[in-house]
Amino acid sequence: MSQLTRSEWEARAKTLNIEGRAFINGEYVPARSGATFECISPIDGRLLGLVASCGPADADFAVASARSAFESGVWSRQAPARRKAVMVHFSELLQAHAEELALLETLDMGKPISDALSVDLPGTIDSIRWCGEAIDKVYDEVAATPEDQLGLVTREPVGVVATIVPWNFPLMMASWKLGPALATGNSVILKPSERSPLTAIRIAQLALDAGLPAGVLNVLPGYGNTVGKALALHADVDALAFTGSTQVAKQLLVYAGESNMKRVWLEAGGKSPNIVFADAPDLQVAAEAAATAIAFNQGEVCTAGSRLLVQASIKERFVPMVVEAMKGWKPGHPLDPDTNVGALVDDRHLQGVLQYIQEGQRQGAQLLLGGHATGVETGGSYVEPTLFDNVSNSMSIAREEIFGPVLSVIEFDEAEDAVRIANDTPYGLAAAVWTADLSRAHKMARALRAGSVWVNLYDGGDMMAPFGGYKQSGNGRDKSLHAFDKYTEIKATWIQL
Image 1 (cartoon, helix red, strand yellow):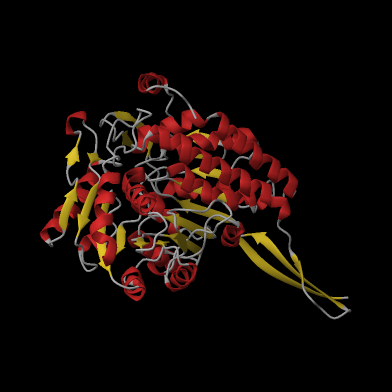
Image 2: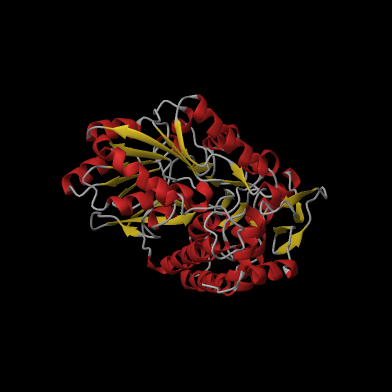
């Protein structure tokens, strides 16, 4: 990881070339309307630049370019080994520009530069490289048939794929879509969040430099209710992959039904339970993990362990350990390599988090730590990591996704109580269990209605582990070979010999 100091990062930021135009058919272009929006850094409120505000006309242009590239076969019918070489080269260019991309990420959405370098960029690079390497290792099938027949089961690219990604891990979430979508031969239109568009715009040129043909990857910055809606309703978009809020995810399903029944794959909200039993192998490790699970990335994590379920017999001893662990997570300047809590994405989001904290107090939860905005004099959007005790699962802070560093401690007695409380949520993205009892661990993992269950750790897994949710946390899976299912059609070909 880079050893640059804060002052050195700030010096680089002053000379950084920030591209704000859309990328369509292999070129940077302004929005057809000429409209732009301001890209403001949550670090200090300063203007980073103007970004193209794309709309329906831009969506039409990008879809037409993507469709033309797809139908030409320049990528969709390219030999797997060739696609693999381009994807691997793309990952190498991402690696070569890792510091530039990390700096863009930090300036744009406020995360600590150390996290951007150690988490976001390695995760992005690994996703693109892993999917590229998998291209020539995924085989089709031959069905069991009578001697005079031949049955083939083959995968084909779905066509034009629109991807809408969030602002909390802008580049990494994009790579989870781009990796399998490009690997399977599709043309892609990437719509980044208007709150964090800069890295998506930048990597479009790197993909082209790596050998991806023009029109295969297009990037449309803009607002969800304009260009996002246009893509979701577009009759020539074959599939839509989304990560973001549950409210928006539901609307995208409506748009798909109103248009061409495009495939819609959703990764939405979460309110993940982190369940600590009295026989946890190491309570200190569990306490530190509980703090990390809510404070990392300022709590702007869909799998954040925002509900800490603690067995009653250890609660009096364990909760103070969590308080002490959370004291080590302090907001600071995101370009300082020692900072572990950066800025929230913008002031609007900050105010929403503060409202939840006020509501938690109003409903009777006990505030043990934090609860205030901080660093107001900087012009940035910072909040103290916050811990509430004596929370009921019916309270707003326990039921609604805050998407900030706000932790709710909920007491339980027996395993059955923990399962009931954990599953009492419209979400089902992730869960964790801390216990030394192997049978209990397996039983809990089976009983929890969540797409990822971690035992004696929080947030485990790599590219080999599928990622997605139950219930209103979405459908389909990112990562692993299971992600390829989202971007391919399965065809049965039956031949009479």
